[in-house]
Image 1: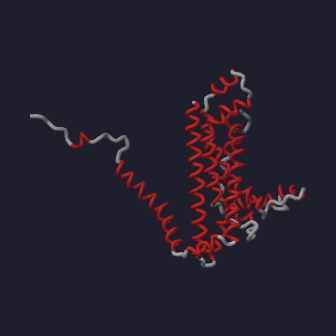
Image 2: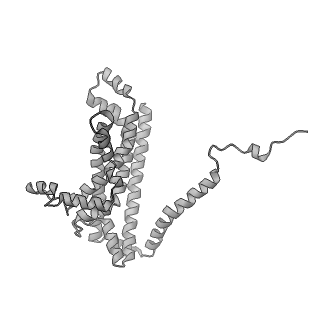
Image 3: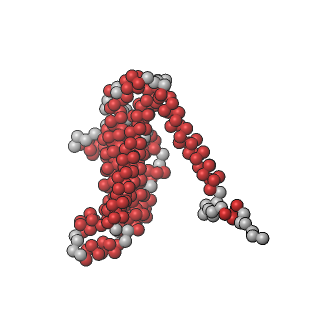
Length: 284
């Protein structure tokens, strides 16, 4: 008599135990934490007529706040990519006294409460502060200006670039650089043609993380910005102001525009990252 295998024996073996249960918990958790709040935002915004929605987002104060938030967030992310890359290079490729202390300092913006960071930056860069008083001599005002907002966004975004690029650069095979040097490549050529293509996807990831963090930043910016409408008012602050005025429709409309714009920019950055990874794989 032929013995047929049981249904359990025919079922393909799963590497991860309890996949169905864990997948269900994952989707439920993401739905409650991410999708539900976003859905509520869009549902609330859909109560507005198209004319009212356009009138809210095209108001002069709203447009300037969005310009300040997105423009300075992009600029801060670019600054962090440049100088964060230099910090990563020094931490990975060189040995110097107190290197571990310098490496730990990078993580301070992660652990420091944003309000504390904002107060500290304001105290430093105000006209009577340690750094602000020196800059005031040459006519540069940082605190309570868009430049102060940029300083705060660079401060909170630096760790994202450093911690994203650092392991990639540490794992980069030094033999590739030695081979390039043996073929006559200069240090600049080696950096541009060997090192940079290898870490470019990580740099784009760090850029995206720093930008996303900066767009919605509130605590560290609110103190140093000055919050002057049309000058140094950020979009998150304008949303809070509209909520305090019980103008919930205005707040949700501005938040929806920020959300859609952030999604669009992150989608573009993600496509650039995939293109860089594919290009690096072809060159390898």
